[in-house]
Amino acid sequence: MKQAHKNIQDWYQKYGRLDLPWRTTNDPYHIYLSEVMLQQTQVKTVLERYYFPFLDKFPTLKALGDAPFDDVLKMWEGLGYYIRKEIPLKSLN
Image (cartoon, rainbow, N blue to C red; front, top):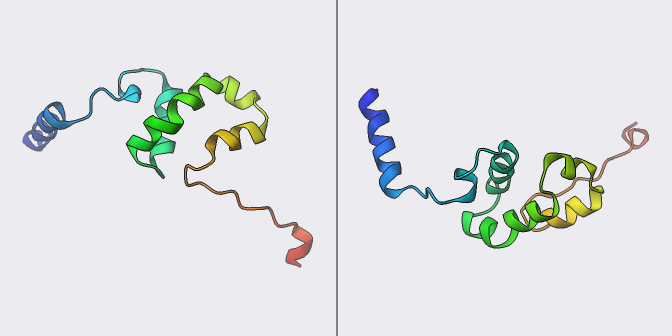
C-alpha cells in the first residue's frame, strides 16, 4: 500500500496540475467552490468563465450568504446545475 501511495504521489508531482488556483490556496471557501463547480464543468471552462468572476463578486462565504439569491443564480448560470421549482404541497394531495 505504501508503494501504491508513493507511485500516485510521484505521478501527481510529475503530471498533476499543481498550478491551479484552488491548489495554491488554503482558503476552504475557494477550494470548496472549485469542487462544486468542477462536478459539472471542465477545468478549462471553470478557469475561463466561472471561478474568478464568482470570487470577484462573492469573495467570501459571508458575501455569498448575504447576496441576493438571483445574483448568485446569475453568476452560477451555465455551470450545469438547474433549479427545480418547488411544488406546493396542496398540489400533491
